[in-house]
Figure 1 (cartoon, rainbow, N blue to C red):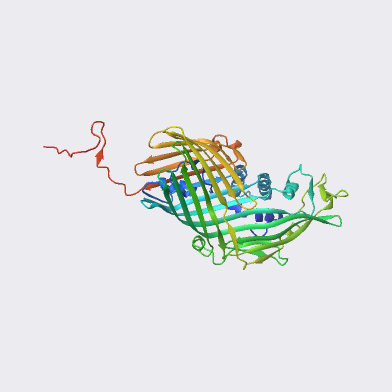
Figure 2 (cartoon, rainbow, N blue to C red; figure 1 turned 180 degrees about the vertical axis):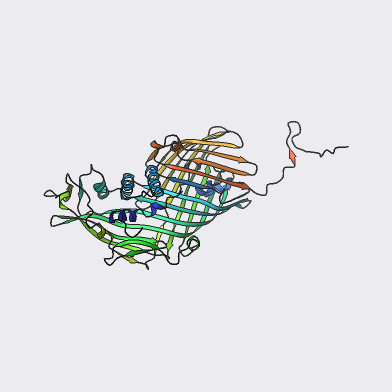
Length: 482
């Protein structure tokens, strides 16, 4: 935010400060869940570690990345305006209106910096370092719809709506372990995690419309908790006018900040019911982060008057105001919404959005498997459920193709597609949870893509070859006589 912005633009920027960081963000690809030997599958179920090769290694930038977000039309439009310098109040209002229509806006970035896996007689191990960023917001409610949707004509007085949102950026160090408890039948796994938080923004702001003496006011109150390397600027009326970078800010200090620590755990199992059917389930990111540095909690307490010409008073016996024919949220004293008190001492904690997976897979023949997986992401006020139906077809020993259908939150029209390529020295994959994004972008709400490569280390040299007549024989070296 910059000093001199209009009050209305500052208000929208305050709500969407985190969304302006949407340069290449991501979401885990759901289509790959049933590919147990795929290099990143243990990230959604640690029990799948038992299917990895003996030694696996990967390092950034080859180690893998996944990108995804919903409401991709609004996001693309905002990024285009931002990069062209045309991100004005009208553009932000358009994004604001679009996101209100979504029950939940979400996006997640996850990239692996380094990973190493090892299978042994005592179990399967995995160490990895990931960089993760995610944004979630749920702004749909009675008051926001009253202000932005022409068809919504009334709203209750003194009935607050909570703006639910969070943004977090952190680094994750983890150690996974899995073991077969019953051979070829039951595998269990866990992954212990340490989080180092880089940035956090958590609004806990109720908004409401109140009335007194036939006057009506739009008000904000409550804290916006943040751990960001910025200082907010207040004028003499305690109104936010902008923000500046902290004096001690540097990219190095930001990326290697270790003051905001947290811990978490993943748990999972995989059970082979019979030769054709496999059942699996897991819980991922059961934990929290404690925020202790770069603290700047904005305690809002402001209101501005909606001019009487724009509203109709409540009818006798009810507590609802209605829009007049000329309804408009005027500029008025919009600045008053930014009256704040900055608290740089209050520490806080944030729980991780926890994902629950449940999958069932059926082996039709040696080359074709079909499966279903359900993912429920729990987060206070912003929970979401997704389901994916996929078919894994093994073209040959090197190529596997995956496709099917996915419903991701409220995005119902998604065709997942992925390709896994295996060779003697490693594995590569690329996939999307929504092929329609490339075929019919105007009909697609969700956008996402994943890719990565790993290498198989310390492979034994093949000394013997197989023959139709002699099962195994050692080749003789032939010398040429001159």
